[in-house]
Image (tube, rainbow, N blue to C red):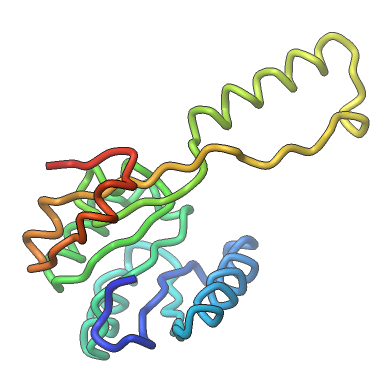
Length: 168
């Protein structure tokens, strides 16, 4: 994660979304394992974005992790991040294509294709409770080099070599 201090980053998350608490807990747990501390900045929607980004910027942080439920506001988020010179890390490739720095997540297209198989089985009479639970097996790393350049960041060649997609 890219930020001013090796132990600080900001997390933007919705206050009222029921997925916020587990999302924040999972990220804080993962960050702690690698010696980072996340400081959540909670917002309810676009009306609070400007103040949230200003607070993150004022704290001296350089990176923002955006909760997936803000995907409909990607353009506004990317514009604010650029204004405040903050890197966006996301779990959605669309955010990286829109100007975010990095996205890393399960391959959503593969996930949806696999879900179709389960729908087919259910429509043919299978009981959902008897179907196996599956975890994603393919993950995507996408890096936006244009954004990295605009932020004055150099992406290590080893990270570029691991990327599934590099946006020039």
